[in-house]
Image (cartoon, rainbow, N blue to C red; front, top):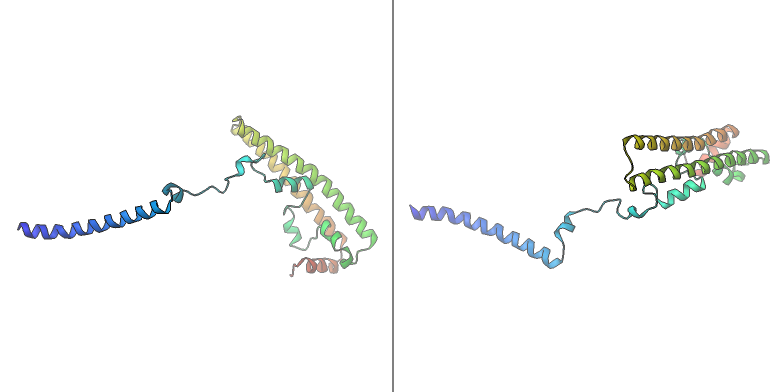
Length: 190
């Protein structure tokens, strides 16, 4: 009877020793390759490196675009629905056969939009910077967070409105043929 028990346990011992060999081989491969298991398992945050930004929520490119009054996609829905933007209309004025009067009116729409966008961009940068500073100083609470985010949201909405409003004004100045030609020139085939 003891011989029978030993035979059954020998299969278990063989299986266990096989697993031990595999675990040992994996461990040796990791050690030889110089990998730190923790580093191999851990994933770097997509925010890594951004902790050094002056304003954590805005990249340098975004800050520059806000300071320049750039569109930043704020009017994309207008642009892609046949509401041309004044900046781009001016760029293709010859192809659209715009009169001097129409060019002057388009320039006026652009200048007004651009001036307001630059001012709002600076306001948004300041609001984001103030919020960042509150987190950095650990002087933020739920009430001040809500207030800061409400201000930032209002500024972003105003900025988007300025860009979209310019597209509305521009569309009213152009004929349907000019809008269709604009869309064609911009690669928007409807």
